[in-house]
Amino acid sequence: MAKVYKDTIGLRIEVDMAEALNGAWDYSFKVKKPDGTTTTVWTSDVLGTIMFYDTIADDLDQAGEYAIQPYLKLGELNPPWTGNGDTIFLTVYENFK
Image 1 (tube, rainbow, N blue to C red):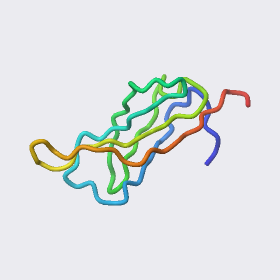
Image 2: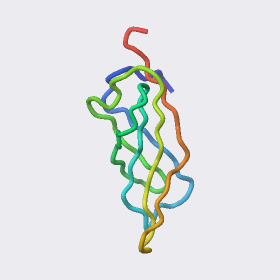
Image 3: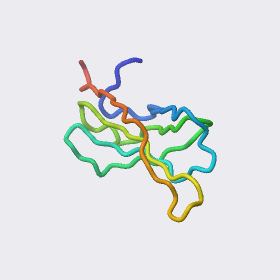
Image 4: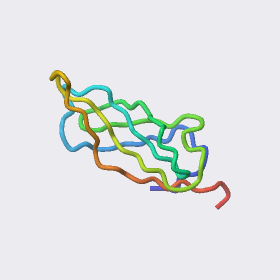
């Protein structure tokens, strides 16, 4: 994978959940930015077993390591199963490095 630089727009973040996501809903990525901010949530889409999100302005506004954790709800139980997938890490570099 090529280096990712600060303020990149249109970068597709993909996580293979390794099983079909039929019956799942409320897909998102919880994101912890390099400064420790953890309130960021990116609403994702699904294709087969893949959850994905395309970055927009201000998503990658800091250089450093981002922790990205898939989150979803599954089934029609009351309450439905809710949980996280494995955290992935993305290093974002300052421009001109």
